[in-house]
Image (cartoon, rainbow, N blue to C red; front, side, top):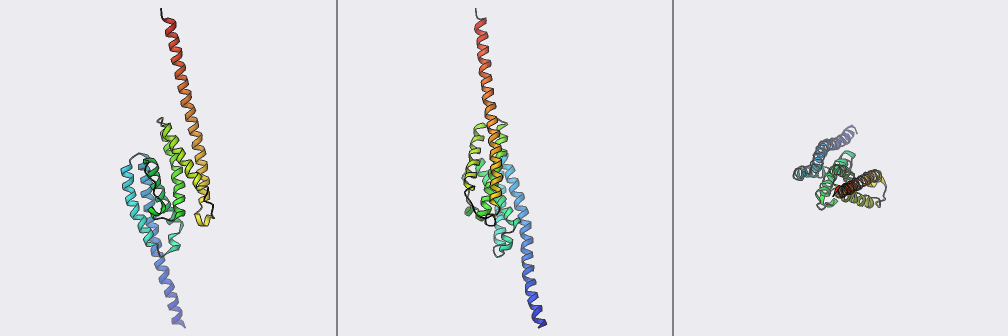
Length: 219
């Protein structure tokens, strides 16, 4: 009986050891993936799209490693740190697509689960706020309006996905956060448009007054 118990314990210990090894590898690769994606997003905001794509090529290898090593370990595959890294991977791809004006890849193309993809989509739409505000500082109002429309379209699509958080990875909370970002950005856009209109009206008034003074001074 004692030998049998030792064998049972040893079998469980071997399985746990294998799980632990995969978990440690997944954590390390997930951290590297998040770092690569963050750097890619920063490059995208600088309009350095070639560098952003180069970093995403490296990120693709890291994401593929996570997916292959965790294929037989669902508890690790769907752990928070793994899904967060894959969500960041999706976000980096979509931010690049939105700002470089290229087709957005789908979840099958990226090889990630639908829940991670949708959460990454919401985060990518929120990230457009930064691009809009940076553009407004340089008078890029028209571009800002296009990006705000993209944010609206993403929110309108996500709000229709009504499933339990256990299935969607907390998508409802992420969508609610996106709604707040969209509303703040819309307010900033409205203020910028009104300021542009005011500046244009003041310029027209100055031109009208200058023309009036010129006519009055004419012989």
